Image (tube, rainbow, N blue to C red; front, top):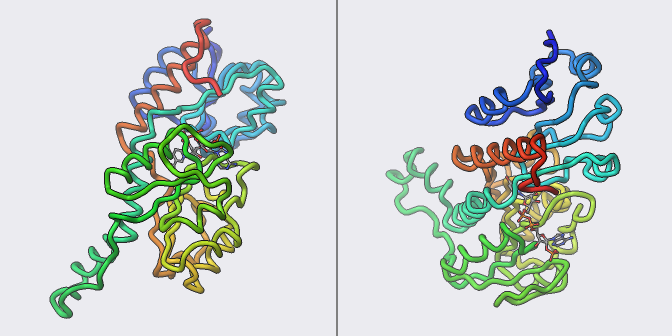
Length: 317
Ligand code: NAP
């Protein structure tokens, strides 16, 4: 059941915020819970003309096919830094603002990248299983891992998150190199292409945006350029890797392995990942902490409140 207008700006909620921030927008706005509607199309047709703001996140994002139902839309506020799932150009063409949540998630996402590296090289998951299964008491010492110290870490996309990963890796005595569209003023070696970088590192970490421009940036040629004991770590977007080529390389043991937080068809990932023993998997949860999700939610609230009180947006896209 939709409610009569209360006079407050009306928002369509595609994905709810954290409870504390939901409370804030419930007080300041009139919410329409698309996420809870059983017949979503009918719900959109019913309330669409009243909607002035959309609340969303990386999933489900915001697709242009909703726009014809939202003639009064002014702002799409997403609880994500990535905007690859939002039709930003279609919004901008209609003068609709888009906001995201940069910076506040850098540390947690970078920590998770380092966690995947540690898990891969020091075999944290394997060790956990080794103790729990009783193999330790039956067979003694587990197989050896590999040192992080002295490894060459290559970052694809040395932006806000990539830089945090690089700084953490430096503290762990790794050497850093990177690739991207441009050379930056940093004390790290620059390689112009992912292939050049892959040939010159032991751990390739992906931290660039997703979307059409980076789709399959990491293809069979890049994987072929990697050393047979090198690992690839992806906390960016599943679309950045040609996953069929990756699985082929993993099955042939052409590379050491892959630590993945993101996948091409998440959450329904390729089932071959279930049995490969040279992968470390995480369910797209690099920013998934209480603290960071609250900070991301708060930025959504702050952007909405700024927009509807005529102030500058804190984090426009
Ligand atoms: P950012 O500051 O914009 O950094 C992105 C970097 O990627 C830039 O340094 C850019 O450098 C580089 N880049 C852009 N296009 C490229 C291309 N075609 N080839 C190579 N490098 C390219 O963004 P951020 O805040 O660090 O976030 C990066 C991405 O991380 C987000 O877009 C999102 O997809 C992902 N992310 C994932 C999670 C998760 O839960 N797994 C959480 C947060 C973010 P140049 O301009 O020099 O090329």
